[in-house]
Image (cartoon, rainbow, N blue to C red):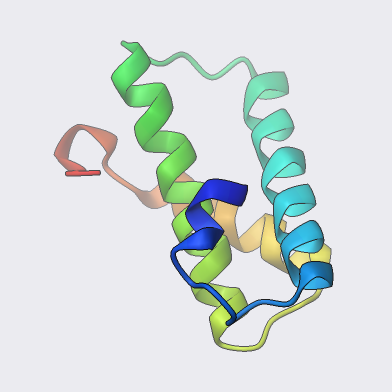
Length: 87
């Protein structure tokens, strides 16, 4: 997640980066704990990318609530089509 945030240089302060990284880690733990099956490592990376992009997108819009960021990203992932993702 931290590497993905570097592309937004200066948009997020160090506190935001810590928050967004923690939200991503928490969301990914939820996915892992759910027992979700991914057909390939490519699908795992796509799922992580979908989560990260959504968290960043919502933060760019001003959202900073950890639970709302996490839950929104998980819902977005659940609605996504990883097979069709070009991430």
